[in-house]
Image (tube, rainbow, N blue to C red; front, side):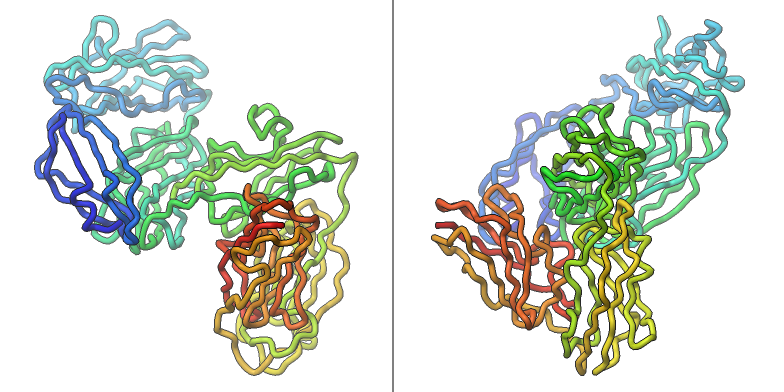
Length: 626
């Protein structure tokens, strides 16, 4: 945003009266923070208006915005309410050594915390127990400690302000009465929960300043123990204050949203210390780090590749994969709707196909391997809803329908492109090797993919790309100049377990140096804005240097889409010098002035690149048919 346009555009009122204060702009100009000149009054109605005179740095006017909230009321007149409890409401299998906790949002009067006003009832024996009650130093947390272990399998309730008993805040205002129901398990629990995932993950970079923190544990945690101190987010000179802390229904995942945007281009720390399980055992302390980008990230993640397409028929032994355009918070699968279903894109969990779930190392691709064969001749859906990226943006929902055939699929993956191409010379000595297949591969089957100079195997780092359909070999040191190398591809299997078709070794020869200049698009046919384009046309893009053919994917990096954003099925060919790439739609384009857009390395994963591995060519152009 343009800072100068905000002063007169931002209006803050309290109970209908404008409030003065200071306005600052942060997050690379993408956030606005208002600090009132004096504190808001208790229980006041605050309205926020950012009118359409606000402009971005290009002079575009803002879409009018308004919102409102109410500040907390005075303690002398406002009822205290419960904000966290342990165990969580209606929990089952609660450890027998659990100490109960009920936390209010205001300090309570200590003299009202007694066994008349606060009770613990055990249903199995129909008995009101006499637990030890205590109040925390800040007066907000009631601790209810049973005299011994809970009775295995019994139902309990704890009640604050039971019957005629009244608990009050420090000003004598009765609190919100509260009943906590739960069911005891069969054993004590002295084993602490462990951290499964943290988002943003350790060492991640380019995280939006609007990011939240999420942590997944291997079992339920004590909600009272999760605070801005026990999961602390800090960076630079800032320790973030939570605006909200929330949990999934099973309390194994917590999400903490900061009150203000994170500092830009800053290394942040997530320090976990003091979180406990229901039984009181403390999670091992740990600290991870991530680095923010210059501003906010509001780009929603979406599926760029799936291993099955709409209308496709697969074997009953099929496995599945979905690749997103950016890394996903792995823990967000808890509470999301993701998988394979025999009914309507997964709505109705009873129709979901049991499957094992795993992720690619870069957290962009999720794999599903059904634990039992699919039913024959049945319609299924591969779907994903409600997962989030590392900045907390919810995904664009995804669903494709497909059918199972009458038997298993034994067809293995087939090589589509290899780079450097067979027989090419003058290859930069910094060239990576890439092999693109027609389907997703098993990452455990790469041992037979090698780069050799004569009989010597070149040390490389092997990884998967493009929704795990491609294999990349990155030499640990630059290749020798003027030298012939051989690419060998054997033993690769797809995610279903089918072995690759045979593939003859291919050779290339290096040139005299490195290639460090990114490629650029020289021309296109059709040109941008062209009209009356024949439905039988092919789309050509000419680059200024030889390109890596294995980085070209008609569903991702070199893609034609119709006006509804559907990918047009196509194949790709190259000129002999690999400077011209041609997309061949498998069916004629729709006529009558239909609009199509060609995406050339536009926000693709991976990007288009030249033989030296330099990314480039990010652009798009549109045309209409005859």
